[in-house]
Image 1 (cartoon, helix red, strand yellow):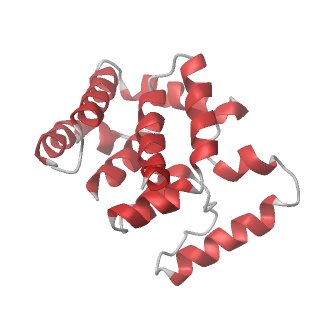
Image 2 (cartoon, one colour):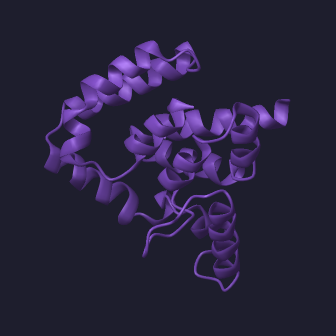
Image 3 (tube, one colour):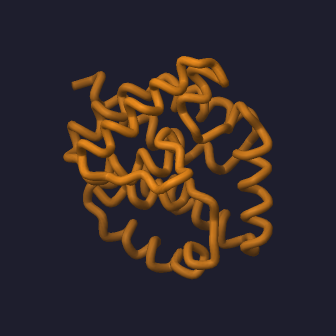
Length: 171
């Protein structure tokens, strides 16, 4: 499901490749049938915001938003465990799950990083994706709320992920 690839890329650290490919992302959004009109609108608003900024400005905003503010951390187990010992086993379990599904986590990459999780979810069918994300729905909701309090444009993206995670609970 391409929406998860798009979300993963938009939630990852912005680089020159992403910024130069935004017109192609817009075309993909226009063509994708599995994206609701509300999701498409939110994604287009976010991309329009991105296009107003230079790469270095986007990178500075990203670092300030996600790296300098613990409440916005995209490593999901951080919100559950902080630096508690319980985080290690959760990360190992997630890493093993990815390996069993054929996804190799790169050396030094932490498996609970939301863009990585979204890349994995993009390989699942719609119900499997919703169920997998449903396990993280509470954390994603808190993260979205924190980003909204900070008036971050990234909150729109987290709300899309949260809404898709709740589909599993409604089914």
